[in-house]
Length: 79
Length: 416
Image (cartoon, rainbow over all chains, first blue to last red; front, side, top):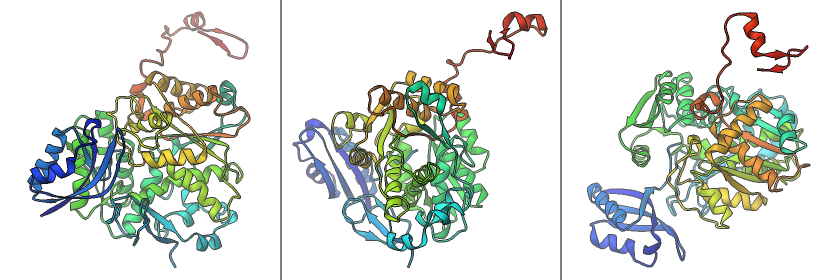
């Protein structure tokens, strides 16, 4: 069982959709939101995913299909 | 009692022991070093600093290491150049260049942060260090690791220019060329840092690593005769350098080295990667990530980890931010070289370009003491200016040919 942390940024058109909830329903992963900032036109959440690594990867792909960008919790580390 | 009190979450304030950790377990916020300033105040003085080594380690009392077995003992204490020619050109009475193009050993400000990171990593018992980089950071980690006999892994994107790869290979680290784009390398390195017991300098050692940037603030103040400048212009990639210069200025006040901080902090980015400056100019306290497209590759971080904190520090200081085009970056490099004899890499062109803009806009005024931070050497990014510098004047090997091409005055002045 893996615990992986990601910074997820929502697309403007997805701000009013329960995307994290949907991902938890569509994939066999547990989502745990630790910090978030959602405004009228922009939003992000720092989320821990718990589950099988391959299933987490599928969940991340699912997020991307919904228009989200997914980064490591550290954001950009290549300097 | 240690001068380091704890690692503290920048978001929720939860404290952690000073180990190799970087993310708050509660809120996933970034950690930074918290010091016992009252204790440091008793130990530190201007005299003690002035009697210290000619390196950034003269500020040891305010750096996050326990001992004196330094990796990178010669980093820092670079010249603060009074830039009379550039100042006159721009219309500033007192302009200085903080010249990290001559930082030791790899000619960029990264030698400061890496020296701190690897010194701390060794104190924490690590034998292997690593980083993910497209340039200056990799050079510095590789060089310092070689001198400290540490195992070293450098992760680079598969499409990195040959010259930059060579700049790492010469130190013989394990250079890992990752097939994939920037995001793929980024993600892989984050995962490796979590899996392996390595000191990943800008991931699990980041709280210590970032503190090295404070020495640019300390040195500036000391070199100005223990005075803070009125204005500073700082290039921004992750935004960490700007936030740490702001932190460093305030630490000098906390420990009694200066009375007050009245410096305005100004951030500089290239238009092709300006998430922080764009947010500032739009009056936002948050930034939107971008896909970088600029010749200023050392600043090309599209989703900057310290972007929010850079916006906050700039607003607190009542400073400003701006951005310049790639053409203005090249002009900035040329202007600095031709007025002050300092050849900066593209980040320096960004800084000079934005400095010029801020003066023109009246944000930096004629009588304000101003410092521009030049963070890397132009020899690293020669390709950026290759089409802008012209060609040599080619002549036959004869005096006649020479004098035909150069109409010289009595003192050798003249033109071709």
